[in-house]
Length: 310
Ligand code: 1BO
Picture 1 (cartoon, helix red, strand yellow):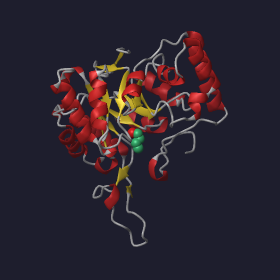
Picture 2 (cartoon, rainbow, N blue to C red):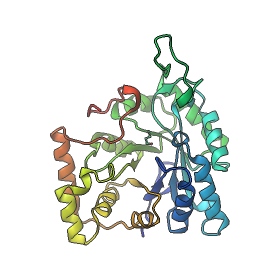
Picture 3 (cartoon, rainbow, N blue to C red):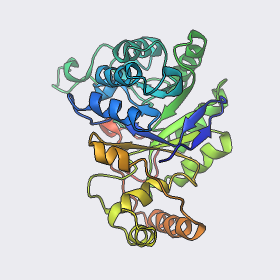
Picture 4 (cartoon, helix red, strand yellow):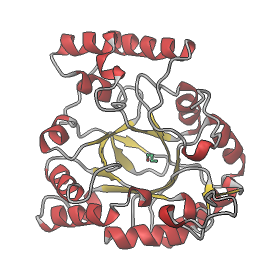
């Protein structure tokens, strides 16, 4: 079981592994969160737009009430949804209310775009041409200034971003009084996003990797180098793909509501130099050949500055 932690630029320790809750359905996620916390997880990653923060909060409460964990020993992440990017404290308040917590450990800007602040996903007003009135133009740096102000409220211990490309970070950083503690991005050997990872490392921004296994049964789990390393260590390919993040210095978020998989996803292995080279070469070649695989498409066709056109 991995109990490894990394240090954020705030001085906080962040666990190397965490439970993702995106796409965890109602009626499942409460039990998954409670089970994970009772079985060694110390990081729970959530977001307003996942639509399940109330259940995530119930799972956290169950684990705390059972005596398995204390609030101060766990690391809870939430993210402001794009409809609240001009009023991030309101977004945070909504998440805290759903979670039943008075602070989170880390609050992230989920996507650098502004959606109609009047609306939420299913009830956007329609324009006369019948299209949904969704996207607003705005300056994402202004959202970051509001995020910085949140630190004084005590409602979050740290602030960061998610889905920020190199271009967006380069726009943000010259104006940031507080350097983001984290950039949470889709990351796996089939989508190494190395230029973002390198820039973040240089600036002291910790990477959290979401969708680290790609999609269910996705090609990354069948890639030859992954299978080779898995065979060498006698572990399933998923353990290799999850473990790849640790020598990179990143936190890896694995999503599951299945108790056995939740336990298995915590069993990381120590990859040696040869393993890391094999996996990195695979990642680098895919990048060079323009064959990286992005599973999470940036919403609404907005150009987020990722080099692979998705
Ligand atoms: C649209 C959600 C991506 C992962 O947080």
